[in-house]
Image (cartoon, rainbow, N blue to C red):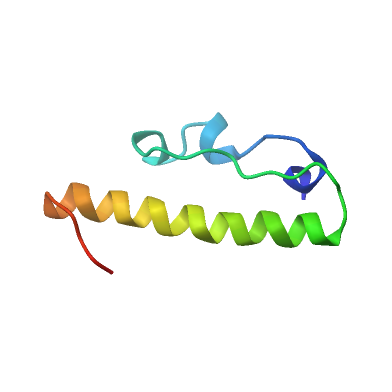
Length: 67
């Protein structure tokens, strides 16, 4: 909810949770603070999650992977 109000804070980024610091990603945020902003943040987080999964698979399999 904070990220829908323009606060760029994510526990995974701040506390280097698990192996998230090994992947290239940015905190997803919007500044409007309404329900559309919350929806857009969630949509962006789904896209971010897919990119993190792709990076993890590349590291495990040693190359490009098609999902």
